[in-house]
Length: 215
Image (cartoon, rainbow, N blue to C red; front, side, top):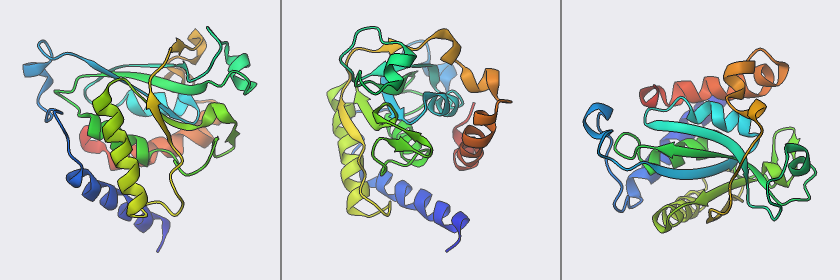
């Protein structure tokens, strides 16, 4: 099976799992013009390797109102990028996402999460190695925590990925926004080598797989 067929198969399997996982009280998508003014925004925090990549993906989804790169899951208050990169603070590079559940469901955000990074590699995404690059879901509600755990269990049970998922799932802790130069990074620096070599290929796959969910 070539790489394209594998990607198609992965998307199909995840879509099947989506239909079998209880959505709880999540709301179906509806036009922003009818719901935006009355719906309470919600927040979720994801770690999926370099936060530049995660930010670039989620910024392009309809219903996502803001994406802020930062740090979570560590023990040091107000860490700097250099301190996080040392691996000694315990923080992960994350993106905190504020979204309108009337436009985009938490289930869709999870589907994007699983498909846009490798959740089976421990403390690593490609050439980015260290605990700060770990795969992580920091839930802001009990419902988010339950749904994320259900996804992980079902994906592992169905062997959607060739290796077990190692994604850390826990309640959100203190969030520290990253330095200003990390914000909106891909949009501002798309010409740089890292963006062209690492982020752009991910973006191209994401844009094809989720074209009906884009702004």
